Length: 321
Image (cartoon, rainbow, N blue to C red):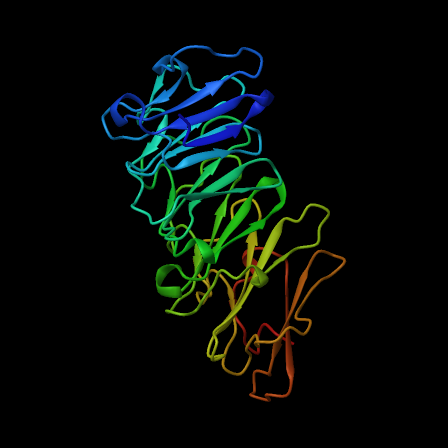
């Protein structure tokens, strides 16, 4: 017995056996202080409800809080269990698991966050992400927009940007035909939905590649209230600065003046790393763009605003100096 073994809370052990009970599979919890002698039974663990379900075949993932998540790779089921007491005498169902995950070529990856929560993603194919809290189960049910963040491009392109108050951004430059996106998640409730311009801040065209963590800057209050996304198209034909609240994030398209401060052909936010943004002592934001409204390409323009909706629009002679 024992396809996978993991140590969880209180030095307890969890052991998976995909061949249990004719292939139903199981993940069995054993206390460190009460040795078990005899035959393993369903009363000792989490088991499948049908032949060849092979619960636990895909691995056991230990969370930062020393709880554990089991994965059935054949039937693509994820189940959370408490590390201190285990799942004993429990059968997998949509009431305690995420079922019907997309087919994948590899097992998921668990990424821990400093706050103690974590995310689970497909190691290679992605297209989904499941958020788990510091303690307690993740959202259970059939796989979809109510249990996972779907529409992610590839796991290798995912970046995590931590924000104040436990919130975070999922950056993904490959999603939506490489339009890319930043998707805001609270870090305190399920991160669910589908990556799109109604759920995320996205690019406008293929290969806009929004979602690089280097595009993000935090404001400089004692507890930052905003994050700023600076973006430019690779051919410098479009550019923008988007000011978003850390408590809620931004949705929409980076080239929309209702969402962002949009550069123009004569006043672009250039593809360079020279200083371009300053937080003034009074809390205002000062942004630098290359060029001038009249077309003097060697000049510079400056735009000032109070962080928030006042920072949206299109650069022009009337709002820059």
